Structures are given as C-alpha cells and as structure tokens.
Length: 172
Image: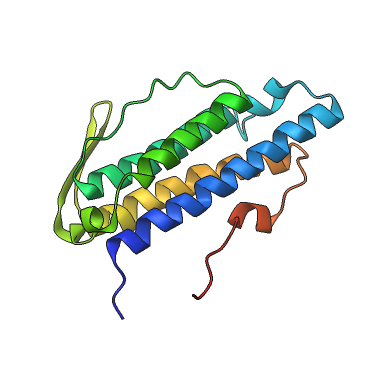
C-alpha cells in the first residue's frame, strides 16, 4: 500500500494543531481557576536557553503552514509573530488551519521529488519533498508541539497523552 504525501502531512498537521488548541484552552482555564497570571504560562520555558510557550506555538504553526505550502508549491503565508495571549495563539492556530484547508490533495500528492528550499537567517537547506516532510518538517513540528505540551504539563496544567494526541482518525 502506498501512502500519499497529502495523507502523510495535512491530516497529521490538522490533528496536532487541533490538539494544541485544546491544550491551550485547558491551560487558560487552569490559569483562571488557579488565579495564575496567564503570562506565567505563556512565558514559561523548560530551560533559559529555550523558547517560551508562545514562541513554541508560533513555530509549530509555522512548520505546519510552511510544510503544506511548500509541498503544494504555493507561497508560504507570512504572519507577523506578534501573538502574546492565549486568545491570540488560538487565532494563530485557527488561521493556520484555515490556510491548510485551502490546499487539496491534488496540490500536494506527487510532491515527493519537488525541490524545496528553506532558510532561517543565514542558514538554508535544500530537500526533495519526501525527505523534507519526513526528516525535517514533521520532526521540527512535533518537537515544538511536544515542547509546548511539556511546558504546560510541567507547570501543573492537568493534561495527558490523550490531550496531546487529540482526536485520532480511525479506520473508516
């Protein structure tokens, strides 16, 4: 059985972004219930040299939209990266999901050999589509989603593996 590039990307990004949204909602409720300043969670870090929760969420959203756009051969949407509140992070995730929903399987399937270039500052990387998805975009995306989850769990938000996984698609 062959798996399509669309099936290996879009549903995965959508599932995990949706679960990240749900986890953030639980974090906001936790802060309200416990009378914790929301910024204590939003600016939490696992270690001083790591990004805070807000940046982890932004980067996860960036990898989802960037990977889907690059695989589809369309321009990657530019976002301002100014989100600082739970509501703004929720809006960022919703905007990212809305963008991903504009792409269809026909745009992404067959992108295994598409030339893909990325750059972050002075660093650039060149990939073929399949290598980019499996060995760069998905691992980066999961790193930032997992780190966001770990930050919240470490700070007392009552979340577990089911929250992290979100709604898992089962056999049809």
